[in-house]
Image 1 (tube, rainbow, N blue to C red):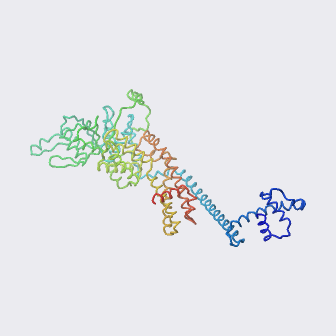
Image 2: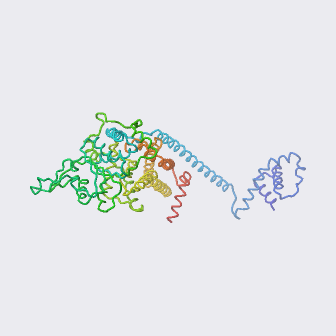
Image 3: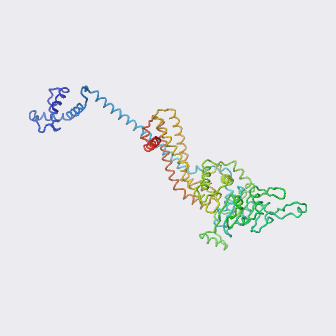
Amino acid sequence: GRLARIGTFAKSHFKPSTSDTMSAMACHVMASGVVSAAPPVAQRGGSGTAMAAARALPTARCLDRNMLAIRQQPVGRPIGSATKLQAVRADAQVAEADQGVLERISEIAKAVDAKHGQLLRDHAAGGDSLLEDPLNDMQGKVRTAVGILKKGLLERETEVRLMLLAALCGEHLLLLGPPGTAKSELSRRMANITKGSYYERLLTRFSVPEELFGPLSMRGLENDLYVRKTDGYLPTAEVAFIDEIFKANSAILNALLTLLNERMFDNGNERLDVPLLCLVGASNELPESEELDALYDRFLIRRQVAQVSSAQLATLARIAAGSPPKPDGTVDSAPPGDELTMDDYRSTAKAAVSAVDVPDEVISVLTALRDHLQDKCEPPVYVSDRRFMKAINMLQVAAYADGRSRVHEYDCLLLEFVFGNRPDDSQKVKAYVLENISSDPELQKAEILFLGSFGRACEFLTAGDAEKLAETRETVASMAQLLETKHARLAATLDGSYPQLQKTVWQSDETVQAAVQTLVPQMSENKIKVEELLRETMIIQEALSGDASASLLEKLLPKRFKQYQRGISSRA
């Protein structure tokens, strides 16, 4: 039956007189196994017939395929070349469309890779871009003052800087530590460089108000006036040092609180302004009674002072023996015009508030830190509203004295000396600030924004919503700009070895090195994530700038498309 069908098909499509064609058909039948033994075609036709059959074998195989197609056609449907031509044309169109998509993908990839690579190279060369032009000449003056204060002292660089910062803020400093750790010496040196009047007193539990505020005036008593002679006592001092301050009794406490916070002193029936710039309090232990909590809160900056470490004992012995080592960054006196004046101390705090901006990322660190300390630490670390506000002003002063017009995140490392009620709280604050800076919560928000933009682009391309698609283009362009800025900052920070942290006057070399070691691993990883996210954003931006479709975005970013589909499935 198959031979008959082949013969019928051959008669309708080929000339009957063509012996080569028939021989080829016979060869095809033998090759297909329909006839088990070779017919004597070659013998009758001779060698020429056999060669013709071999040449016609491909044609015969095509006939067999055509016969298979005929058997699959429904009965009664006319068979023609139109169906086959349509199939061929459809295949050609699909191949042409696929080729166009591939060319478009290649075009986008080349454009994005060129632009992305150039951006990375440009950012790698911008290590000093984070350093702004000096706002003033305060930084040089502060460095000089630090050099004077720390001369001949070991491991007191942090205490020196905090004392200067407290004075410039018009705030007070509390030094907690054992006796003999140079607490009073630092205060005396502070009075010397400010050239201000100085008062010093050691309190005991038996101390009376006259020791701090002056004796009662005998002449005033004769005139029925309860006033004190305050000259030479705390109400007339500009820099003061009170040792064992938490030994103050209730008779001293009320007047001391008003003097420290409001800079006022009640003398008889008069309330007088006091010139106090900074009071340094010292204690061997934390306050134990609740009535001293208010006094403890008056000290904005607190520092735990330790003995000289074992590594520096030999140097301490040489200093005691009169053969100190070569000075390291210390100076004997400030050159003319390069010293902080009392006017600088008085005016810096007010000038800083009006000249220095506190950006959103710093506000985020501050608010997150307070919530963390009060809600997630055990025991909770209470931070009063007054302390929170003063901490912000202190950061502004630190930036202003550094010659900057903006507070940066690394200034928040100073908060370890501001937020905290116990000595070990400072480590909690420092660890959280470093973690917050290195983890970069804004990067997580940027990735969520990217996924949302990608999903909207796919949705609007499918729906053909041109207006919504235009809005998505603007969002993607803004996001690309944001990521470029973030990458530039990360590259400048890492490649420049943290220039903002290295150049600040408020951090010692040891503190900077410890902070850098903590920050580098996570921030290096963040830089890689930003580079990848920036490239993906640029791909979407480039794709949406021309002819695009959801399938094109799927082929460009298959992983993101799967995330988009999972998001749709979860909503469904």
